[in-house]
Length: 282
Image (tube, rainbow, N blue to C red; front, side, top):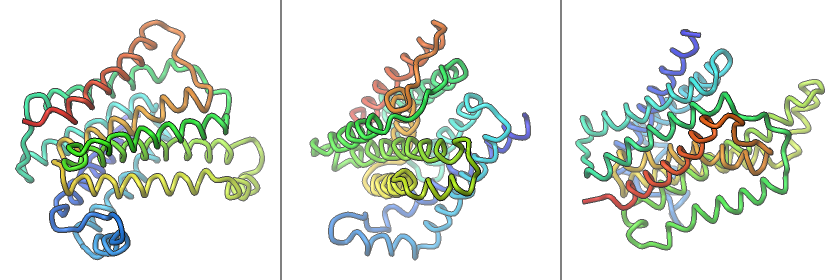
């Protein structure tokens, strides 16, 4: 158990350092949008520092998958939150970023919300299977929530809208990945299942949503401070799969009172913390 939790800790550090490298290049790279979208992406991929950050992201995620093989999701979720703290600390030290009191409160609220969410996972009722129509509804709602902050010009200018949307898309990607993995491990032999999965939209939607989340977060880094953008995106990317799982996979709140209360409180704290991060600039 200690070995796998250690892998999770290393994974969280690698992910944080990867985002830190990518953030450090944000002022030198053109944001990907409009007609210059592909040109901007090519510029990102030609930047060695940014590419090194992307490589750390892939390695960190691979270690996280290995850690999942031997450690409970709930315990890993707590360990992985250390990555947010590391990112914030290094952003202050090396990127010289600062935050207002309200924003520091929001960052602390995000970490507390994720800890409460992790504490409730072991007691969660098992899912009873994918409801494809409900996942479509969850996707429509998610895209709607992702677009909503763009209606505020201040949120667009400060990069908050992009950070918010990136977390939504990362969360949707987790839902699509879960749908694909459920189909892959659905009783039959692995190879026929793998072929069948390729005939579903889930792996392609998961890839598209992850790419969208990455691009949006990098765009957010161009206009916003990392100590605000990263916690906001991370919080939503953790909450969306839990909320979406209740809708699309028939997952339920825990039966025990305390874990159920912790789950609900984590949702409320995430929303309040996201509001502080979005609106708390001096």
